[in-house]
Length: 170
Image 1 (cartoon, rainbow, N blue to C red):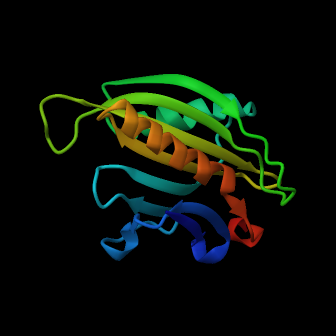
Image 2 (cartoon, rainbow, N blue to C red; image 1 turned 90 degrees about the vertical axis):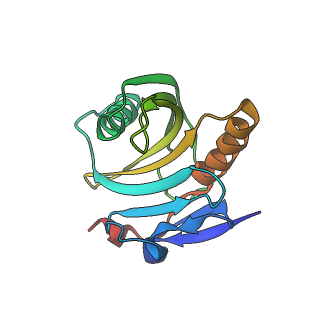
């Protein structure tokens, strides 16, 4: 079951599973992030407000953010699988997201072997501001059914994300 959640004090909303745990209830989270954790797996969803990257082409911007995440994750390998744009036809002014799917090999918890992690990412270039809002879902690969379910959850979040108050980016 999913519901619309207020993010950044209601300045942004998105539909997310009700089972997700708000990580700020567990630990300190930077003011530029909203982080949600699955209570039953290592899946996480993060919405981050970042300075826009130099790339003017949104496909290149999505790849830049993906590669930056791979660097931050100390990934031993990173591969972009697909990049598309999901048109926003709601008429609410929220930019259409550029959506990327990729894989990263990441060592977690000091393990010897790297885990395959599917990354779903949506980049919203905020017009008139030097801001990219980046929605990311990290899904450690278990089986295809879990990946399909995670992709559906991510797509619902990416399609539903709405910027309600642009003062957030002032």
